[in-house]
Length: 352
Ligand code: SAH
Image 1 (cartoon, rainbow, N blue to C red):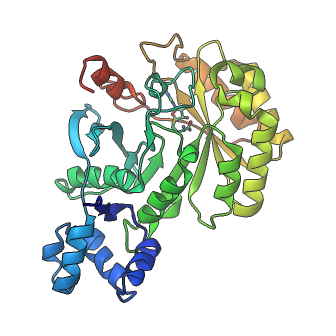
Image 2: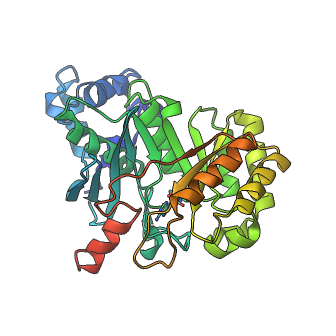
């Protein structure tokens, strides 16, 4: 029997095309979306306005299955970290963070990561495969099912968990469409952020999508010399190429990008680095906002979190240079909150 296709991985236009090719009316997909995302009904038999014969086709060829919750950790600040198990046993992390502006889902895009950033726990487990679109949508729906008990739901999605989204471009974009679509999860484009370590081809292509979804770039250094030490991808795509890709993105999308910048003690957190970062932004004519990230220390890695006074000094220099800058709030410090830490721990304990 051929594998059933998971409907959570279909945007409305993709599902419409597929159902029309099966001889259905083009409204059928919208009807299904109303059941799935409007009413939260995942049982084809309960979809009473869909002809019985077509429900039979749906049951034999399609499914609506969510990942299973393998481990759930809850921090004192309300952060929830899930280790989710996919159908083939692959495990990925998903995090719920509670900001005053809403409930943010931080989702993974791959099983493991191939980018090898030196400071990151995700790369401790090498990439084994891409996640399918339905597995990314499934992460958000699983968090929604937890939030439902409180009468709440996910209002923002950041693709900042394990994996490099632009190394899995099509599936990530399909999932983003489901998040954003009015008949899907209806999360505003400006409430969705895709974060990349800086793959120029993906950045340029993203600019041509015609969507208003945010782009964040993990910069983490003001020059190639430091970036090469901590991000191997920088050797393949040096700063010049990265900045050129961002300029091309901005020509098309006309959107400000976010530079993420992890502050690592003694390595990239000195006042001269802040000045150099401001120069880099101005000299390259990119329209950017900087999000400073206090490093979440990882046991297996030698890097240390910058002290708060260094973080604030860095912030103040950028602000004085006229660059909008924020310091990222830290979440779930009493659980394994850094990307990939929970999964790596479970794997070490033999729970793979
Ligand atoms: N591959 C993508 C998305 C996943 S990483 C990217 O590189 O952007 C999401 C963000 O978390 C990146 O900015 C990454 O550098 C950062 N990050 C990874 N490990 C971290 C840690 N231990 N503490 C703080 N931020 C971390």
